[in-house]
Length: 291
Ligand SMILES: N[C@@H](CCC[C@H](N)C(=O)O)C(=O)O
Image 1 (spheres, rainbow, N blue to C red):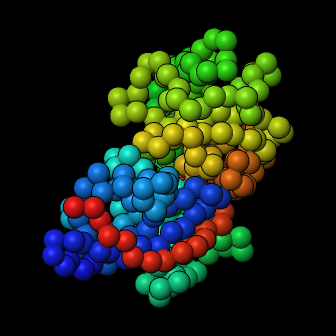
Image 2 (image 1 turned 30 degrees about the vertical axis):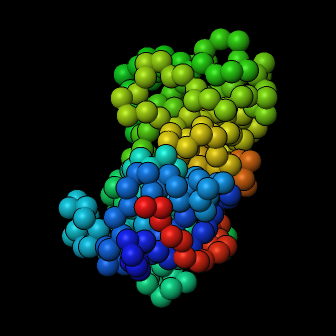
């Protein structure tokens, strides 16, 4: 970070995982304190650098987050493009891990990182990185067990509200299995889908088309962003919901999830779930923050 005449200039990198893209801010010693407006500026695709979210790469002990001070060395400080903080980002964990490995800040093939949703174990794998996302749970278990669904979602392109299931992966998800009458590609996700009842802290919404056991396609509307090309925790939530609706078959624990930005692997370990896929860093530079 450089400050001259009240102008602040910081280093950045740009990366993505299946085209879910992030502005990375290396801040190893916790010197950069970005406001929500500065995050929104950096993520702006016309006025800033552009990204679905921003990841500050900071030592846990210097991060200002008391909950992670005693955990793994590096904290993924994740913000959505609108400046709001999120608990977790599955694709972000791989891009964060790649930055750490490329800069000799972490040694492969296995290490842990800190997130607002707890510590996550990362492994280097042939197609990129695999993140153990930890335990998942159905947010409204009683309703889900009684009816298979626990809410409804209204979206442009569907004649009536569609039944949905709420899945908690540290961050909130609402998953809809599309009936054959609704075209996945035809959905209008330019506006946030309306979820009823409204989750208290908002939600990411996934629309799923099942092809075969272990294979689904999906689109996602992310909380704090809008439609994105991919969402790692969303892919995990979509696979979990589809597996759960299918009666939790023990012979279908590995899922291929196709998103507009590429394919992710989701690996169910009954009550735990892992995510695998690529990670890329595409640019580095410096940017001056607006006053
Ligand atoms: N794209 C991410 C999820 C990012 C956070 C999300 N928008 C939220 O607010 O929970 C992923 O890959 O998981």
